[in-house]
Image 1 (cartoon, helix red, strand yellow):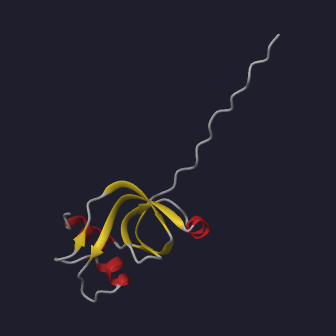
Image 2: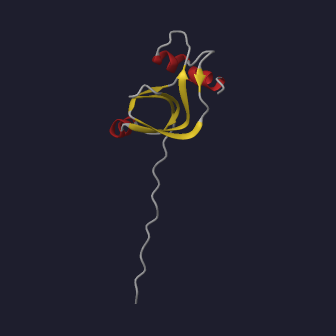
Image 3: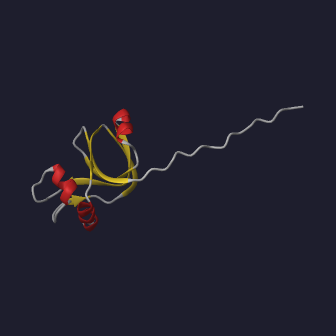
Length: 111
């Protein structure tokens, strides 16, 4: 009698809450979107998958600094690309959490 192969049910990874971030790469690229990876995973992989990813070509803000962009968001005259469903960003240099106020300003910038 022939034995049937046993198939184990697929395990699902525990879902994690997404957080809205700005990701910078070692090539000075800037991206805005959502990630679910932990800081430890990003450090280990030097990469992160960004959902609803938007390229930040340039921005204008109160002080112009990167941390100000994460706190206050882009101002009028900023150029933020259209969102793509998902993008793998390699060579990750920095990940900045984005404040609620800044998220609203990003949403107001149309590509």
